[in-house]
Length: 277
Ligand SMILES: NC(=O)c1ccc[n+]([C@@H]2O[C@H](COP(=O)([O-])OP(=O)(O)OC[C@H]3O[C@@H](n4cnc5c(N)ncnc54)[C@H](OP(=O)(O)O)[C@@H]3O)[C@@H](O)[C@H]2O)c1
Image (cartoon, rainbow, N blue to C red; front, top):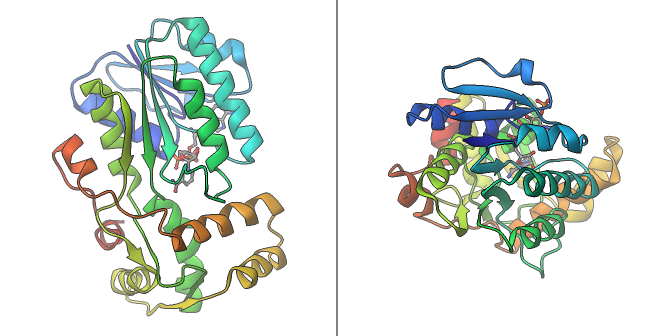
């Protein structure tokens, strides 16, 4: 049986969908709100709260493979959740873990989430596993930064002239399902096919919506000050600003070919994603 955590979320629900579409009839959707999982033939919804170890262990009984969709929020919270999930997987005798890590997990990076993902990857080393290091989601970028850009006509971000390999969440889910079915082990990188610069993102947004958006590069300190003035918490300011620093350092560059090699279909460009959204 195959379990997927975060199964009410974007990546988790997509992975469930792709596994069912591939003909699997032994899929368990692990969610803290199992009632929010849409019923489907071959799918069992099980209650699994990252903060409730007993619920995790019970939900993982009988799983051969568990897809661990990473948790979110404060880095400390994320790591605690991952520890709980992996301890429960041990206790329940789960055979193999497929984990959604982050593309920039370099020890030298300043990216806020990298140490937490590295710590989780270290916990995986003594068991059969696959780490799918994913780039920034196109959906996340659009939800977080494009709405304001469309309202103001300006995409003001500290991207410099660098590009980022934005990947649609559905392409991530498709690739995760393929990794599960193929029994892939080791590290794979899930990225979009090209590196979208601020200018390319603004152009794609302008085309998709008919509202002109232009890219304006801003300095890191000015971006942080803007988030602070908007009342964002310090950890979120660090998470966003350090991500853009990492992009400027080329740490979110495309790993072309990996998603297509896994799934047989190339991932969408950001422009294709926006046009289809
Ligand atoms: N690469 C990127 O650009 C990027 C951006 C953002 C996040 N991420 C990472 O990728 C992950 C998946 O992204 P996504 O877009 O699919 O996120 P999402 O749509 O927000 O889904 C998050 C999932 O985690 C579940 N969850 C949260 N707290 C939980 C808890 N205490 N116990 C059990 N389940 C819990 C949520 O359940 P509910 O439905 O009950 O809330 C939901 O199913 C994120 O969690 C984060 O680690 C990556």
